[in-house]
Amino acid sequence: MKKILKNFIVYSIYFLLISLSCERTDQENIIEVKNFKYNGCKNTQKGIISDQEYIRIKEIDNNYLYIEHINLIFNCCPGRLFVNAKFTNNEIIFEEGEEEHGCNCVCPYDLSCEIGPIEYKSYQFKVMQGELVYADFSIEFTASLDSTFYIN
Image (cartoon, rainbow, N blue to C red; front, side):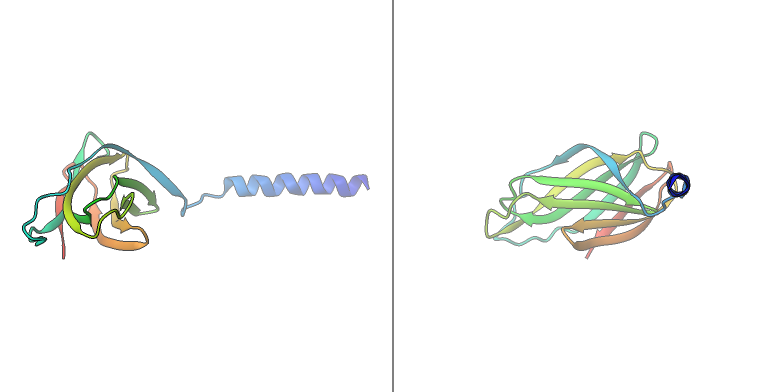
């Protein structure tokens, strides 16, 4: 009985050490979002939205990204807008959303924030709205990054 208990303890410690020493490459990491701002619903004439929608991504303050999403379409009465960011391996996931769908109309908004710290390297950048991949593009995150991506 003592031998069985001893073997159980030894094997338990062995498997614990193996599991702790394995590197996990698919782990999600939350990225800090700071200085999040957005304007109210922009004025449109008779519900016509004609300005081009785009996302600008720029490196600021060593390992932080400044993100602007211009002419983003959300509900006219969104409650409040929010953003979250995380990364997995070589993918940055930038989630945008609205708290509620209070009205039967939509309008363009401009939002901006800073996310980081993030390591300088190549990333696939995905903009998510709920489960929908709203935009998906590659970035090379360097100290000189300043790119604009147009949304069709």
